[in-house]
Length: 346
Image 1 (cartoon, one colour):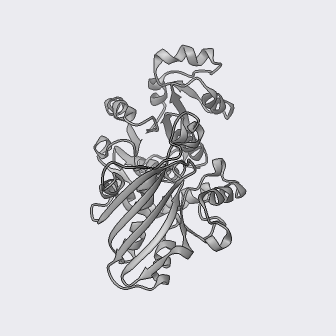
Image 2 (tube, helix red, strand yellow):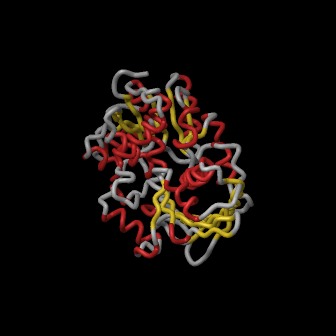
Image 3 (tube, rainbow, N blue to C red):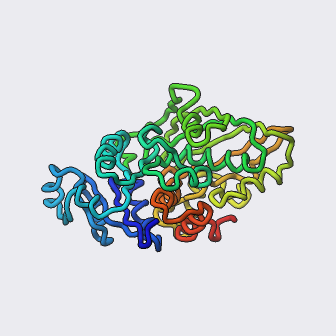
């Protein structure tokens, strides 16, 4: 266990990387060592204006970055020299190659959900696997959708209510900032397999989950929308179901009756609350849609694909480095720093 601030390096300064960097800077037990990337556009210039040290992830890109007006503090190896742990937020399958370097340097690392479970050998959702990640060399913070699945099903499981779950996911087509470059319009695209990959991925976190998912890509970019049908282990009243969801600090119950009737209105609420990037770190679950019929419960919720994994990543840093033994204490500290549960429908 370190007796000083944990020095965190971030590889990849895109949608997730810039949010992890900002969240790291808010922690009183962490220090942002810097970020490494290959881009030479506005993102890295914005980082530099915030005082973030920028490194070239690939030496061949350093000159282009300098010519774009970005001050380069060194290369990826230089950044890793000054770090206790690296959070790899590079595009899918890039991290799997970078891991070879991290292992060679015996440096603890975190990868994101686009990588296979085997890359790190451990998959992370704070409320489910903090303890098993403690002191490990590596973990994978699972994807946004998988994180939401584990959060909600684990809440029911802890209450002794979960038997099996079946979910349908309406997935946003692309990230908002690059929607002008791709995505879909005027169509829906079903995922090619049932179950879709999120169900088996959730089982990489908790093998006991009996869960099947189906997914379809839809022409919007704000967030994902989930519909769930869960068979309970026993009969339960609706209030007991709601109490189980409320037991998770990272599930917030919202109400259509309050005007939060669509993804855009929830995102607008995040803006009104002053959240950076309108981040919704919680699962936003519609309380007034929760319906119990016998031993079945039906519910729906929203997932902010750009924000939900950020608190998980911060907790994963503490778990791997051993800076906080108690998972609940880490979750509480992260929540406080990001405003999770602070005046938002708790």
